[in-house]
Length: 243
Image 1 (cartoon, rainbow, N blue to C red):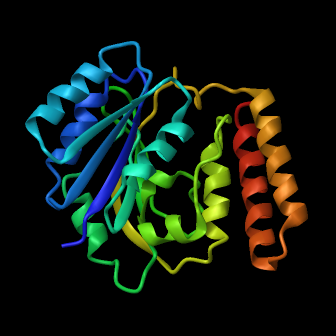
Image 2: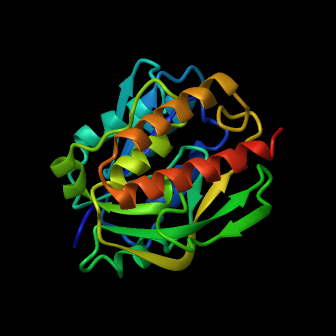
């Protein structure tokens, strides 16, 4: 049975972490390596993680000084030994059959992509989306990746920026992976109005678009140029909603 290495970066997530870990250990697909990366949490997150690790041998905990989500994911990738890679944020959770559904479609594919529910902190569904096309979502959490892609193309998350998911996704798409979009929703994204990405940071937004425009100027692939341009337009429209 193929193993999935699930990487969970954790920073001060004590309010949500138990639900996240519970959703992993109770997956109907059992062949999991659960990698919890404590990113210098100052609350009870590490204690919660250690309690679960004592109960389930599939859980491994790695700690680092606070360096951000990208660094935590990169740290987790160093310990991943499964044939497949998945990412889950510490304040999110999965449906019980999530990985069982995705693993049915791995043949001949480098990536399997699903939809997500955007949930309020009190558990109500705000919206539900399934991917209409492969390049629609920039979050890595709605995908299952063949690990060979990371080693072959040296894929990592750019550190030191808030919107690292966008740049990572462009680097991933540049590998020209084989993929399938599923009309299935198994990921529950908890919208936390106090989170880093929920607050506008115009300086970081400018930095993101500077990096995107640089990629646009230097790409030699017309397909990737179009994908990058589409991503820029979508992000511009997204940020305009908060003007």
